[in-house]
Length: 279
Image: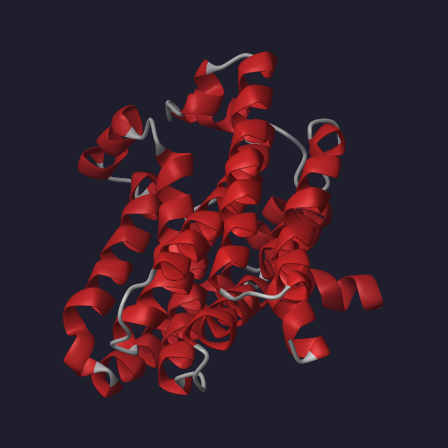
């Protein structure tokens, strides 16, 4: 029963939407040091539900055995329903935050472009041939929505630590995305989607992965020069260390809950720990 509930929570995209909210809340808590704007957090939650439901509604096949794909094929109506729920919630949040319409629209557009190649139309399928940097693109979307958009909506001035935090966020997410792309590389080849991971061999992928973690670590540690405590820096670093330790496992063990619960969950781990410890 517990596993069934977990699968519904994860496969329905409620979990990844929670990740997005916690990561955005962390930006308010650690970087901006102001109360979170719950209107923006609501917009991010419903937008994530909308975009991921759209993405998975269009996904029906995998070259590797996938419990999630099987679940989607049995419960496609769930993604259809949540797509419209997310769309309504995102539109409501957009209207409340209409003053920032340009930046909110930009987040919606870049999110749509990631899933656009899945749309069964020649125009959108043609995007597969130019999706070389799709992993980078997805990491940019997550960085923008969770680390940059809160700063823009709060109309807060940009400081060096804000930039370092955004860089740290990008390279942590990018390292995790590399593991997902490694697992999905056969699907991408069959679908004609080109990416850096489908081009590189195992050694090249390993170098790219660990280079990303090094940049993540350096940018995170550099935040110590701007008043962040050793405890805060330590909590920010923990997910990167765990991602690095899981590298070899992720290249062999393709279980869906391992990826969509554990690895995705690492994106919000430091924020969750900060909330729980009050730091």
